[in-house]
Length: 582
Ligand code: WT7
Image 1: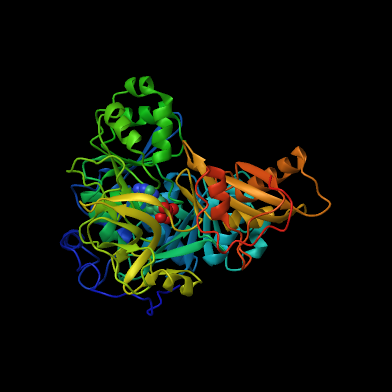
Image 2: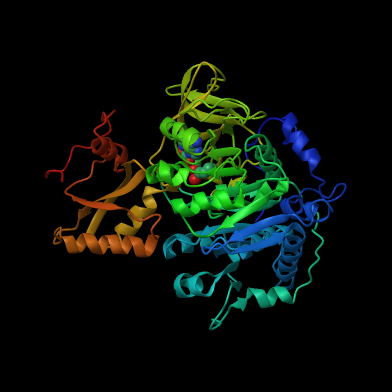
C-alpha cells in the first residue's frame, strides 16, 4: 500500500505551518540525519535510549482483579523489536498490512508498535465487532498478518479464513489450548526473535495506520494515515491534553477506534508518560478506583462514559480520592454543559471538550488547558490549524468564513501533519472530501463572536452511538438478508446516555406478518452478524418507508418524525404507495 501522490493537498509543506509543530518536531530525534520519522522510534526507542526514561513504566496493564503488569520503555523497545524482527522472518514487507483483533492487553501495544517498526501498515480492530464488520475490514485492508487470540480466532476468523485471500500469518496471543491449523503462538514466535532491531529509514509520508470509519453509504471507509502524524499527536498531547513525561495517563478508548490509537498509544508514549491499560470495560466503582489507586494525572474519555458516571451518583465519586486528576478531556460526541458542570463538582476539575475525527487523525479543536472552559462549546481551533465555516447555500467554490459568528459545515485548511492521505481502495471518495484546499468534515457547527465552536449536528445520516460512528447502510444490509425483510432504514434516535440509540424500520415482504418472534429473529441476526456495538436496539415494522423521487430512503424524515422535529424540505419526497405508517 502506498500513498497516492495525486491527493488534493494544497498549501504549505507539512510541519512548517505551525510554530508548535516545529517545536514538537524539534523534540523528536528522528532516525538520525536524513533517515526520516518513525512513530515507533519516537514513542519507544527514543525513550529507551535515554537513561532518564529507559526504566520509566511505559505501559501499566491493570487486570480486573487489580493486578498490575508493568512494562518499561526499555522492555517495550525489546518486545517491539522482537515483533518487528519476527515480521521480517515471516517475509512480511514494508507496506504490507497487519491487523490486530485483541482486547486491551500488552500484546496489542507490542504488535502495533512492532508493526510500525517494520514499516508495516497497522489496523487495530475492536474485539467486540461481529464477523461481518471484521470480514469487511480485513478484506478492504488486504490483511496479510493478523494478531488475535485462540477464542476470537475460532469464533470470528476460522469460519471466514478461506475468504481472506491475502491473509498469510495468524499469530495467537495469550494461552493456546489447541493450536488451530494455520496459526502460530505469538509468545513462542517472539521468544525466538532478536530483541534489537534497527528501524529502516522511514519517510514521513510512509503509511502507518488504517482506521476504519463509517459513512452513510457503502462499505466502511479505511482512512490511511502516515508516520508524520506523530508530530501532531505529540504537540496536541502536550498542549491540548497538558501531558508531561512524569504523568500517569489514562485514555478510556479502545485502540480499535482512532482515539485509542492516537491518544491511547502514540501521543502519550511520544511524550514519555506512563499509560494505563485497562481491559475491563465500564464500571463506575472500578473506574473511580483506578483513578484513585493509579493516581491518574491526565484522563481522556468520552461523554457517554461521563454521563454514566454522572448517573451513578455523587456518593460514588465522593467515596474515592480523585485529587490526582490535573487535566480531564473528552471527545467523540457532544459534551453537554450539564456534564461539564457536574465534572467540576464531582471530579474537582473542568472537563475539556475536544473535537476531531478519524480523518483528521488528531485533535483539531480544543478547550486549551490554561483557559476557563465555556461549558457546551467544543472550543477553538488548535494553533497551527485553520478552521473555516462553510455556510449553507454558498457556492461550492466560495471560501469558508474564517472568523466571527457563522453557522455551517466545519472545514479545515489542508494540510496538517496527521491528515488522512487516502481511503484505501476508494480514492475518489477521498477526493470528494476536499474543495479548494479545504477538507470538509461533514459536521455542522456554530461559531460565536469569540470564534468558539458549538456542535450542531452531522450533515449526513451517520449515527453516533456511545461515541462510535455507525453507518446506517451497514446495518440495513444485514437486516435485508432476512427473507422476511423487503427494505430497511436505520437511524439514530436521541438517547440520554449514549447520545443516539440505533433504531431500524423494516418493511416486510408479502406473505410475512409482524410477530414478536420475527422481531426477535431480526434482533438476533443483527447481533450475530454485526456485534453488540453496531446492532440496532429497536426494530419497528412499518408498511412503507419515505423515499426521495430518486428512490433513496429519507432517513432524515424518519428521524424528524421520531423526534417530533420539523420535517424540513420535503420537495424530493415521493408520495407513499399506500398503507398507513406503523
Ligand atoms: C465524529 C467523528 C476522533 C474522535 C473520536 C471519534 C463527532 C467528535 C465531538 C465533539 C460533538 C463530536 C463528530 C465527528 N464528534 N468530537 N467534541 N462534540 N461531536 O472519531 O469516529 O471519526 O467520529 O464524532 O460528529 O465528525 P470518529
